[in-house]
Length: 97
Length: 442
Ligand SMILES: Cc1cc2nc3c(=O)[nH]c(=O)nc-3n(C[C@H](O)[C@H](O)[C@H](O)COP(=O)(O)OP(=O)(O)OC[C@H]3O[C@@H](n4cnc5c(N)ncnc54)[C@H](O)[C@@H]3O)c2cc1C
Ligand code: SF4
Ligand code: SF4
Image (cartoon, rainbow over all chains, first blue to last red; front, side):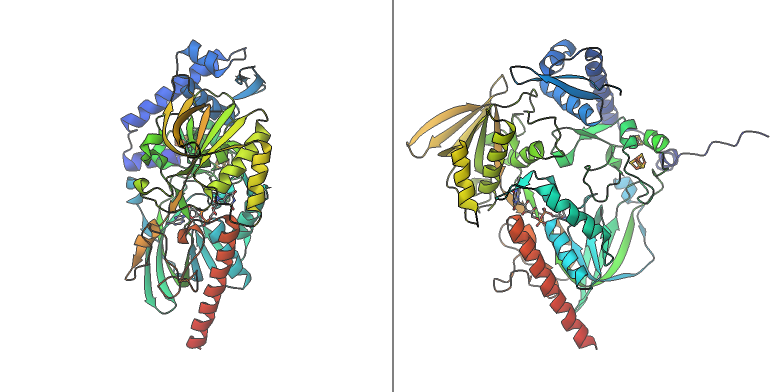
């Protein structure tokens, strides 16, 4: 008896029906954001850092680091650690993630 | 979405209700619940994927400082569960036609969530899997959300929705969903509904702060709006604490600019927005709770503390140490370290001054969210010069069209107690109208 053919996902079906190509601008944004998130996560491997420290090390503007960091905080990838004297939090990879 | 909308199909069934309530904010929910409790069958139509309007985004409410979610969430649940209320979220009213006295035909587009609501458990695993991040509307861009998302933890319904405009159809969500709820075969459907009355409760939208160019909103990351500050202070907040967007630092010195886009002819809105003084005073008090060492300064023209307990609330802010500076702010500019300089005319001293803050909050005014009025065919709902629905001064929930009632901020900016009062009044008037129509028909 042969293996049953895999059922087409509904996302695949819509792709086919619409002859869907990811718009270039959207693809670029997704790639850029993924690269930023990867850099931030790499910085935080095994240590705790402030937004300023991550921004310096990753070469990304502080506001961009903070925006992605807070998005990853919401999705349980990072968590705040202690607060420094100048009002900045240190962040670390979420324990047990 | 355009390509998806082209796939819209007409729904076969003819549905009929006593009333269609448009807008699921506190006004629409209250009006629906009151009508439903009187035994009328209501269709509550909300444009967004969740009901709740502005109120469920707020931190606490003035002057009692009760938790906004604690009041709004049970109402949201009650509206969703009431046997006499049918709730359609993520739906657009396309056309309203008055056929006869007490007879309306309403065309409603139900947009596909691409999630089977009866299967979705709201577990959020699809969000974790999705690779696309875009600014989150309900946090006014303060952080990101995924292309598939649950609007907020307190959303009703607490179900995922796919933002098809930002979806790359990678299928990750579908592979991850343990309930098999993701369904890209869903199509938009247009329903033709018969109703005997209509209640407009589409509320307000904030004045677009970027239009007040001199205030730097959109160019200066640490100039935010009061709605953004509500989010920073709310239990469902986007950050781990009250932090400024440019670098995540806790602000120690916060400035409020009142009447940003209200009482300002140059901004096209000469009217007072009624709630900005009080919500700023509320936020100032909450900030002093969250950041006990912070300085909060409010730049104002005059404080309109007109309601019950408002003057005491204002005096309490003063006694807590909130600084009130009588002055019209002329210009706001960002400094290289992220701080913000406010240039203002000190009315008491009669001279120009400037001050530097870590974070500046614009107390933006409220404008009507009146797109739906364009859907009315054959009749025109009268509005005032700013676009708020005009009501009969003797009967302030009745519009110029018989059988069409209005409540909440769509008839003018107002606070939550006044909105609730008006919504209950609209429900009573609507019920009286339905009775009258019934009596004629029998
Ligand atoms: C920053 C800020 C702080 C505030 N703080 C307080 C406070 O502390 N205390 C207080 O009493 N008041 C406060 N208010 C005022 C309060 O938010 C309003 O009184 C209240 O939200 C009005 O409710 P509403 O239902 O009329 O409108 P909204 O809350 O605006 O709800 C309208 C609903 O209609 C929906 N809608 C719009 N158009 C359509 C359409 N075409 N089809 C279907 N649905 C549609 C919207 O999506 C929304 O869900 C504050 C306001 C702001 C801006
Ligand atoms: S769609 Fe599936 S994965 Fe997403 S919240 Fe619903 S049940 Fe969970
Ligand atoms: S199909 Fe769309 S919503 Fe689902 S994971 Fe991919 S991008 Fe996100």
